[in-house]
View 1 (cartoon, rainbow, N blue to C red):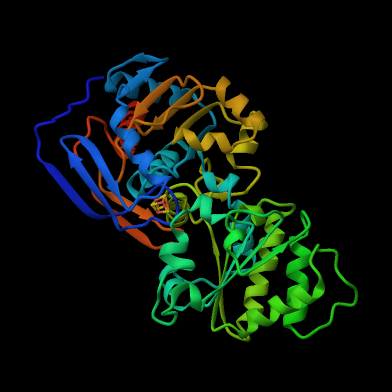
View 2: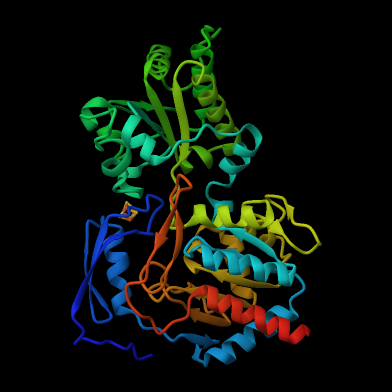
Length: 436
Ligand code: SF4
């Protein structure tokens, strides 16, 4: 399609722009926009800058049916037809969206009596289940910046996955009670292999594969003052764990950031449950928190919106008059592998890469309706494809940082595309007209 480039427009600079590329949601970016192009992104990391500049070069059709250009109205009608014919549809994704789009997706799922699931089910789903079991001692990233003098990264490599986490929140940031930044902090990395993050740590504890639970349980024993009756097989000498336990109880404000390396290793939900119990124990000695390092865009917002609308964060079935939640039964991967859904609406196709190969293969055989940003395209040919405006560039919205703090997004330029909220609402209107 022809993108309405207006090169004669004067350049405009937008400051304090929030970045939605990873869960850090750095809100200090500066964008220079000329006409309808982003010409410069300042303070963006190596993940964010190419992501935003790529928007300039992609002008796909606003709507396609079976790979051919379509009018928006025809694509909506075809989507309504596919979903009306479906007996058990699935709505999946939502992490490359924003609160308005996520809310519209839940409304559509309610109207359809559909399953609705977010990318949490293939990422931090086990962590969420652990939090539901034992609760969590939380803090904001602002508290980490101003107070944390002991920072532990467990099964995570933020130097590569969240490039500005160190600078803005956890390691180098200068805070009120840590005025010398890095010099006032002890950084600990616990992982099964050396990473770019472990290279920058004061202490690196390399544990044996799938021995996280043993390490956490040993730390709990040591923190309670119990002596382990035998040396646990963790890959780490007991003396080093004793040293870590002492540092954890002695610190003024500690935080452990954990990633998929912990949540997806072995029985991930039990690993995280044990870690949350360890953090609860530590709060008898000092102030300590645990936080997930969340990856793509607004996955935290997707969980939050699902929670406030249905009571549950992912894997929800709305076929009955009340919502049902059951990870494994109503999550996308299981539904697809067991061949239990007959139509899928996907908001953000990049999230499907995290599904199992069997689920991805099944997805390609089903009628699919896909909503994507201009610079993202699905790895298969969906039946209906909509290109949508980018929240925070073309449309306002709200994104949730990894610590569940909502941050406003503003529009910097016009777009020829509808937002995913508008597409989803148009489909819902069509379904309502059909049923009326
Ligand atoms: S660290 Fe994350 S939120 Fe911050 S600029 Fe990089 S990609 Fe964006």
